[in-house]
Length: 115
Image 1: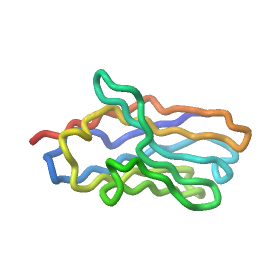
Image 2: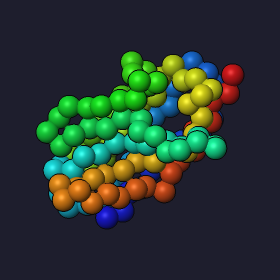
Image 3: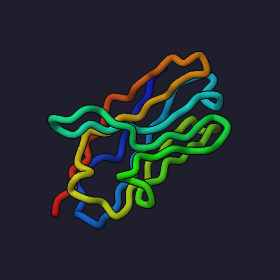
């Protein structure tokens, strides 16, 4: 399984960015997919996840600003980030967890938010 992320870059505070991740995985539709992030000097943390049967979960810090969406036909998981804050600066990783609980990670894409 390979996960290829794209869309990171530099954004202004209060601006928006959209990240996309494409998976080469059979059984994508039955997998949990989402995004984590890791800021310098901090541990990796969950940003948001979408379950195979619907439903989602978000970190409190991004609720109402970020949205994770999936397209099972295209095997993609996107992260729409609005109202960006400087503290959103981090390396963002897409991930996939299969129905057998095996996890896969993308290579990471850097998001930098300037004030």
